[in-house]
Image 1: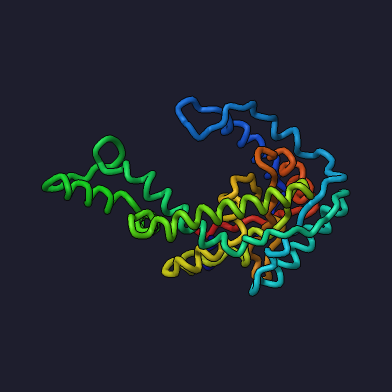
Image 2: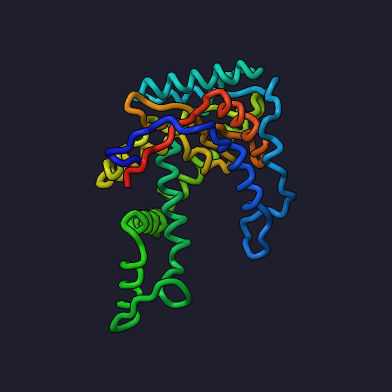
Length: 284
């Protein structure tokens, strides 16, 4: 998000953002014996993939990502990204992800349901914030009322609703079935290609607070990224241009499960070709 008086200027040599991200990911990645969701596998040297040749890689362009109403400059940047990867020796292949149109509603059922379940533990009893009330119920209510922001409360309410006895099958279970279909779409696409190239959002960054009172508009901006979360795939956003107002635009790379290395190689190519040097002036 950008401030209403945000402007961009040219600043110095290009930063190696992709390489920095690779180094950061290597520091963050790894098995945590106390985290049942972390994988006990060797962590690659992600930074070593930056600068590797991508010649011969097959890059998929999902036809369903050409969303209606997408800003022309987004489509133009996407085509430019295709041209950059072609020039680096990649082969471009059109692929289909037919269940993409269901990704946004499925995500905003599954994610709030998980938030509702995971955040139930923050009740002021064992850890975290505690706001004492006159009795136990009031302590629960005040702790959760003051401890969570508006968006978190919204997601907890939605999640609790879709997990409730009368709606679990109609909403949550159905969304999980859609999630499986979306994952299968990617599995089929990756039989033909090594990675996918898509826009990161259907529009440029919006003014700070512009959509604060319209959560649906905010959620719609996630249309190109939620599929990655649903399918459990690595994704990378690479700054690659600006719109007519000077606001930043990006391209998204999507890879096979645990194939972050290929994304760092491709991201390095895009970063080098884009020569994105714009930086926001101080507005705060």
